[in-house]
Length: 117
Length: 117
Image 1 (tube, rainbow over the protein chains, first blue to last red):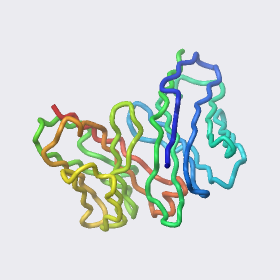
Image 2 (tube, one colour):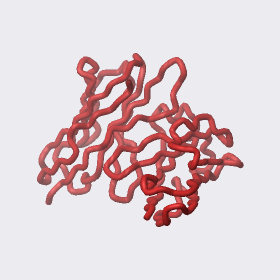
Image 3 (cartoon, rainbow over the protein chains, first blue to last red):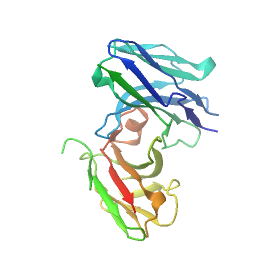
Image 4 (cartoon, rainbow over the protein chains, first blue to last red):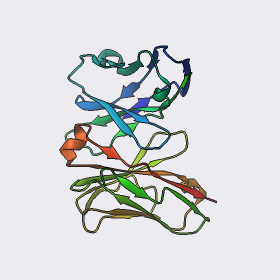
C-alpha cells in the first residue's frame, strides 16, 4: 500500500517557538520521492522540498529543516523560530517510482499550523 | 500569466447541474494534472495529461467526471449532474515535463472551490 500519514491534524505554537511536523509513509517501492508542500489560505500548494529515497542526508534551508529516516519511514519537517507567516496547512507527499513510472503524488491529510503572535 | 490560473475561483451549483472548471497552465508546460481536495483532506489525484493526451484518468471518481485538453494547453474539468459529495476544491497543476514533475517542479493553481447544494 502507498500511504502518507500526518498524525498531527492541527498544531498551535507561539511565535518564535520551534515546531516539528511529523510524516510517516508506506510504500512497496524501493525508489521514491518525498515532498513537503505548504498551502497558505490563498489555496495554492507551494513546493518546499523534494527528497530522493537514496538520499538520507538531512537538509536545512534557512529556518526550515527536514529529517529523513528511512529506517522508520519518516520525513519530519521542523520550523525553527516560527513566524506568523508560517501559518498554513502543510502536506507531506510521496511519489513511488516503480517499474511503471507513476504520475501521481500521494498526499497526507495535512497538518494545520497556527503561529500565534 | 506567470502562474497556473484557474476559474472560476468559487462555484455554487444546485444538485444535478453540470459544471465546468477551467485551468490555464503555465505557458509551455506539457504536463497537466487535476486533483480534488475535500475539506480537511489532502489533494487526491484525478487525471493527468501530457499535451492533449489524457494518459491517466484512474482517479476520476465516476463517469460523471470528464476532463479534456484539446489543444494541449487549457484544460477543462467537467462534472455532470453534480452531487453534494462533489463539493471540494479542484486543483490544477502543471509542470514543464513529467521529468520536472518528479523533480518537484510542479506548480499548482489556487483552485476552484465547488459547493453543491
